[in-house]
Length: 353
Image (cartoon, rainbow, N blue to C red; front, side, top):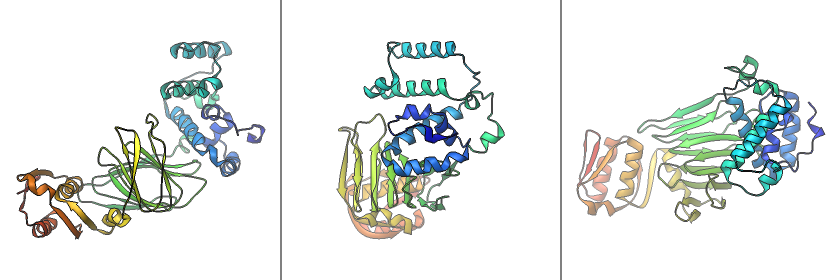
């Protein structure tokens, strides 16, 4: 298919999703179109995010277990009327004007999906049960890497990005980034990323309520607590809230940390020493005026133990030290001697006196 016949420069995400040439590129149905789209992404960086959202929509539809036969014009008209009615829209409403009015995300995605369903070619819509073998070959599987208590893992992704996954964490990623406009991952827990630079394919990490977009950089992402934190070591990143959140994007420079304040829906940036947040990748914790309460929070996250303070006053004691991350049994005497406290490990409880 000749994609040069279309002017995509003004396309919105629902228009990309409804375009057959775009669909074939996303689904790997026509490798001959790859050079066109790679060139297009290079020439139109402002549309990267629109294309990423459109690609997600097509992939979501493609993964569905559809059993839809080709529709007649009259059937399409009936479905379209039903969709407008369900969204409380007049039937003559134009889709392009509807999207430009900034409606709620739920409505926007519903209409986008409807457009795609009404215009997707037969090879995508007719899917009784499992997809054909040729199509499955292009649908890369999602891999999940997990770590247990006290365990760290290092992996090198297909694009040569290096990921250090901290204890009690998980990372989901595609088995291949080929034919994808972006390299997308989902993190639960804590990880450090050394990202391979690729301007054409942004590296996107979804963690907690944040979406972090990078081109080539080193950063630490911690999604353990209610407020996900991002600390930047080098390069630059853009941090956004999820689609339903109102916070304006935050742009980080090296030595900055950001987290989203859920109450005000604004990003809070602070200056930090990145080495304090990446030290765990070298098997150590670098504490600077860190309270015992914060340290025991780390022990809970890292080793999965329950924390019990018998003396609440010691929770606020602070420590300046570099402590090797070995075993919990080896850490306990170091903390005891440094802060002059008594710690007992009974079953899965860490009792501090």
